[in-house]
Length: 404
Image (cartoon, rainbow, N blue to C red):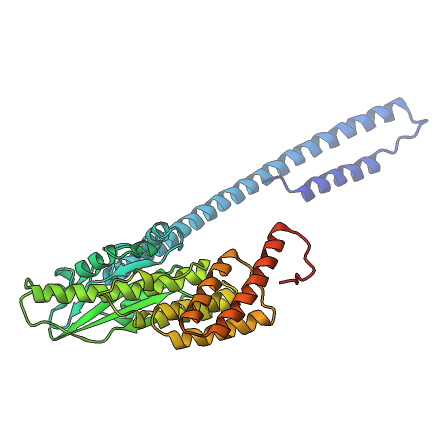
């Protein structure tokens, strides 16, 4: 801290005033008067020096007091801040411990979010989480410490699916059944609210009935963390020993139903995120869930993708029709193809070479249904649009070319 500048100025001003008062030498004054004046001036200078020394000591003492007070204040403030940080840290650690104690996972919320973020490549694929099913006949300790009911069956069913790479399976992150149901689901969703997630959980009612639920969020627009929940029909639980073939077949069937439903959600995600054409209905085996149960769900994903501009109108509707046709909904497929033909006649553009292949398959569907006029209409539009697409691709002039 510097010596107060105002005191220095006052000292200089006082000395100047005294010098002006004393300095009254006449140019014609005597030698003795000159000597007397010089002696008196030296006395004043000595007195002024003594006064300055005293003032300096007073100022330095005051400065020392101020520094000591400032150091004391800083020490007190530092101690107070340190105590506040310790209290806040302990409160936060206690809160985290309570949250972790009540959570269905063994990581804190930040760690869990980081693990899922890294494993899904920052949400490039949905995460598939499986919780053990909760039995209402078990105590909390028995349920939490018991075997991972149905988790093995669901995990293995998913791993043998042709579409298993569509999501990132993170089995084991959830270490206990979601016995708090909605609160547990809310805790998981809040922790992973920025990521696409498919969550599998369920309950066993009185060892007679199995309820399976699938909750998912950030699967399709808007990606705001809002979830959808699907409850599979209640399944009668086999009243046999858990090692019997009947019990194993039941668990396998449950696992396969979950795998197909999760695959449907994954197709929704990839179509609306990147425009990838769904193929789940073609990868299902002949002895699996009926295509008629999967087709409409996949076709509905195109409505969202078209509305959000992920796929263009012609390609989206044509793919939708092909999907429905493959799933056995020929009448609905033909109705959509009529809309596609009308859009093409009115000048709808083809913006991708893949759309040309899709329209070729649409023509086949129309011909297989003996709607030759529809097939011819699409074929004529396809020929014209193919030429225009090629001209645009080669950047060549075309008198019939119109902007898209």
